[in-house]
Image 1 (spheres, rainbow, N blue to C red):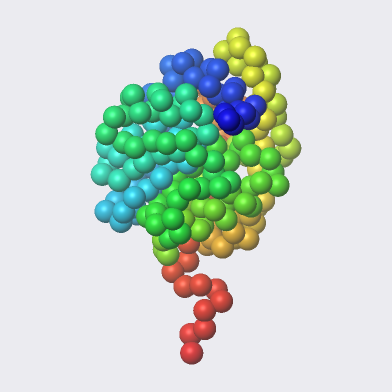
Image 2: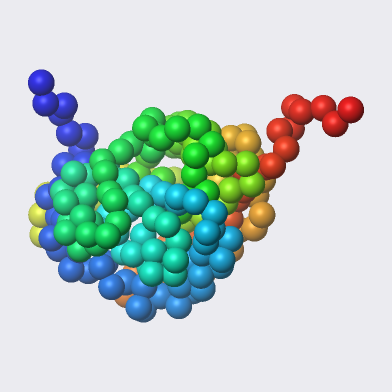
Length: 220
């Protein structure tokens, strides 16, 4: 029996070609994002496998892989995965749900998740972050990006096609609280204003780390 697609998956499947055309080369116009990804690459290079969660057609995974980070990616949209595999045959991509990662405990050297957590219902965010924490090695890094603000947005048309896409906005303090509750140490949170070609919301980036010492572990 075929699993019924969620609205978000079906929507991204529907617009995939136009999405790829718009976003595949996006980093060429985003120096702030490139700088942060370069910093992430420095911490993750040579440490083991790194996963991009919500990889789309793989442009972030491609950028990091080209900087000698051992990347693979997952996405909820099967059509996005098909494009990612076609465009990046040297990187592994598979369908996956960040709320229930099919990844072994403490197996990843890092996670990067750009503008994917925004598509979860707010009450599902702690669950997803707990999953990310579970699969990371001790001391491994997470780079998470999201749209800053309060409330939610909804899109019912995109590229002149019908869709049903909900977007959660998060303030820095709210996301920091979710990260800490999931067990992460929040190292820093930075933001920028939208570039002129982007939707006009603040872009926020959180660097967090899975502690090397469990908070419940005794030192004596």
